[in-house]
Length: 376
Image (spheres, rainbow, N blue to C red):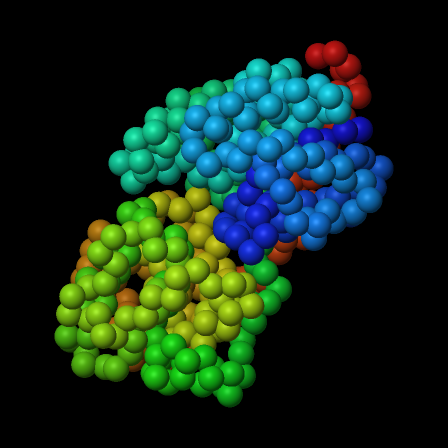
């Protein structure tokens, strides 16, 4: 059968969270299911490395989806034509976007709906598009995949969709994340922090990630403890005012890092300090655990589900709690050892092989329904 796939976030050297989900799941699904034909739909020229197997036909639409107007044109006019041309049986969309103008059965992955709860974190046109169309995408879907029980419940309650059509498909951990030898840790720390230990934040820099409170807590931590522990911020510079005034000399902002460098920076950190207001999953949490790094994260949304007993938690709105968590990680070595051990065990539960298998089960459910009830 023919499975068309929205591949607009497969961008060479620019894979972010959803892009990595797309890459890791599709490279497994396409290789494992040579009996099916996959139509990979790109909105711009693609890299050949994304054509994972011989049963993939790449299609370039030539309409880069850079803002909401182009999203609308691409989804409602370009996509239906391609689905019709290639006689697609299913449309799989790893970023959650669907076309409302096609009768092809659709399976989106809706990673989270933070925009429904924190709309002001996004530009007006983006939040308007999301909050108008995503409820419709959810109702259009034949099956919905999402990345945590929290997100599943949120989608069901917010969009009033049936629980029976939703499936949880956790994210996985990149195999590169593993504990580093002490010699490598020293090299990385020398490069970024004058060989000083450091807390680490990884993520895009916008209000939902709560970098402002994190840095205020870091100021408080330095004032109280006097310890020479630095802060490294990894992420695109999308957030204004990203340095706390008192501690700016102790903060390194790297911008975006390539995967090979990111896993070295992660594995060389004293701890991950990741306290966002809202997460559908929180991949940095399990990446840090796999790298043998203790984790401080938020006690809200999906993060306690993902971290379990292998992390310590703070309210993202409490600077005092975040600072206290930093102090515990900096001074309680027995706690850190316990967290590292528990984190390595917990991170092993999250693999991309499992993710791909569960995504495929949702797609296969649709294929079987089409075969059993053609024309429905």
